Image 1 (cartoon, rainbow, N blue to C red):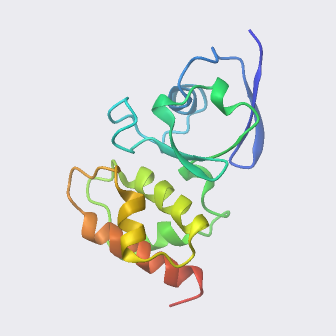
Image 2 (cartoon, rainbow, N blue to C red; image 1 turned 135 degrees about the horizontal axis):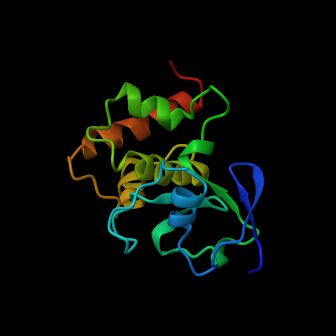
Length: 157
């Protein structure tokens, strides 16, 4: 089988897996990157969200072949060494996680938003996060965390 080349969390990686397999299964089962979660398997809940070329992407419905040569960032690659990404810090500060299952997908979707809009409005945040499901209902804290991350990104204490 041919090798598929990926740029994963800043490193060049290769996979000999069937290119029709989902990126989610490759990340979790082959590469032991278990931050993104299997939720619905249909791209509807957002638990499996990763960034592909900066775009929030549902990894459960994205094939390995779709990722060839693209830049993939998972929650494991979002921090810079020991320094958490502002969204990760804000989620902790705002207690924006309860069971934690949706958290990585929420953070990755939020990261894509903040790459596009450094100072998103509340309406932009709501629109962008629409489709990420939190079964515990911590939506107000998630919105607060994204607001907080914008402050942290510009050096706010």
